Length: 215
Length: 113
Image: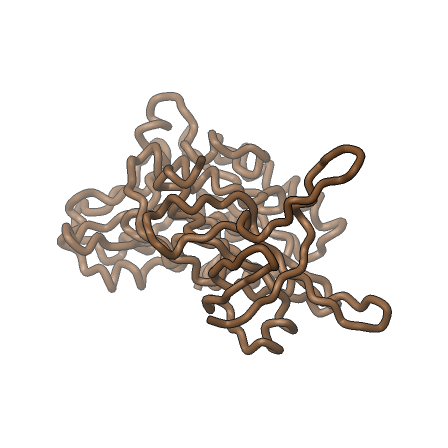
């Protein structure tokens, strides 16, 4: 399995239940932060050192006057060629050979956060203000190394998320996009060739989130 | 029930009212503003969510606005004297035959705080 693992996120099936967001918090025992309603269902407002998976909401009117409400379950893409590693010198950031998971180690506290963040096309890495360490999704490395699927995938009730060997996930993504194209000509699998976490969308990715398809 | 769970509280922290951009424009309300929603039975304070998902109706030639509030949002957590619940607004009337309560449709007034 030299190709490693991949995660498929078929946003066309997502109901924004936030099960994935919760499961990530629970598995990684991340603290809840104090939030206010800022005018959206999206909370916390952004990824942080304590929030590694966030459901982003975007509503608006299409050109034909119809309403859209897109849900984008943002997380680290675990790129094949991680841009975040560009600013790393030694082994602050590690890419696991077997699974392909890109992992931030505690040594990330010595990295230039700004440079690391700028290297990421998807606006993912976040810094803990106290320890200065960088945090993001780990692809549940501890789970996948023990024959379990990531917590978010496990919790998803609609089948939006799937986890498996990369070639199988790529095949699933391709099939799903073909199916969606019949009713949604803009359907696409975002950056499927560059990332391990592949988002399938049925509309212009910028409508979901500014960095959904990268910078 | 769920308001005691910190991760759930983080994801949906407080009461909100969804309204159309048209109504928000008439009342001078921006997305995220604190507003007061009042019915004949009570008044709550909450956050306005201005969204195109709600649209004004045209009924018998008049424009009718609809707002939407979530139910059964408890007021115990987070600990604050500014916690409100839609249940403070709802009418205690029931269908004469089934005694099913009519909680879901009633008149309210909305104004910016």
